[in-house]
Length: 163
Length: 163
DNA sequence: GAAATATAATAAGGAGGCTAACTAAATTTG
DNA sequence: CAAATTTAGTTAGCCTCCTTATTATATTTC
Image (cartoon, rainbow over all chains, first blue to last red; front, side, top):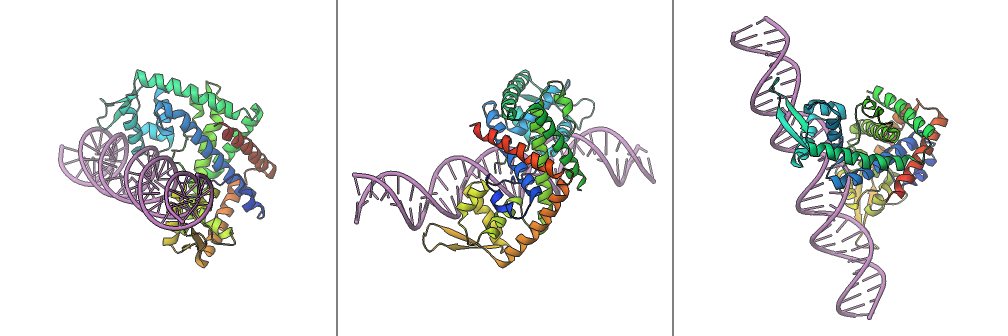
């Protein structure tokens, strides 16, 4: 993903925007800040596994797949560029979490296969991350979590339309 | 901000997690994805001004200040490192949006002063960004926006506690 | 008041994204 | 069936952020 700086400010940024009745801007700031904080926390939890969030997501996708996948498919699922996936797979391969094989049916293609070690690591880090996420989100009731998802879905649609 | 890859997957990622009743994970994914999408959109809107989101935030802070500010203060407000602020100011200075002056009272300090051009640009980009934000968030009613902010605040607190 | 400590800004180097250009292989088209 | 186009993966070069080390100046402590 684009390496855009996160849009965040310290938590009392409301000072700055309070006067302008910028409710939308306040939403935007909070959204960016919260997401950024969460991603940082997840990155912390992944560190013991020597995984970046991106590598972890890629490994997770491979762990869920019955069969090896080409980098292309991983890029599509994560909505990142193929070039970035190349790097993620390089890093996973260095740790022996995955292996590249040339495709026999289409020699342009590479197939990425998760190793037994990779599968184990995926199971482990997912448990850790999921446990933490559950704990973080415990401050919201189930209905609130559902509503948060609903609001975010609508926002996503709104943003996606916008060009 | 840390250059962590955004944690996002294509919008039908629910497939993957549906089976595991991972509501918290679904929240997390949506949060990261929505924020990332929004930041990308904002970055698009800032491009005509030759500003990155980070530079724009820094310029905004300077525009709001009665007096020139040291890089240190900007770093604190944006919750980014001082080293990063050095780079942002470099880029703003190249475009003549700000000027560095040595502080007369503490010769370790630099004071960053916004130029008239910078002030104008800040007013312009803010209007553009704010208009877009308003449009994006129109899919949520006022009470929904307020609730989103409330939910996010609680999440932020929860995440901040977590180490 | 000299030495040790703390603070401000910067520089150097690293990580993780991106686009654009390149190579190889498959597919389409005339 | 040869040429042009498309597709897959990689490489190279850029951007924005980070952490750590460096330099200069203030402040604290003995």
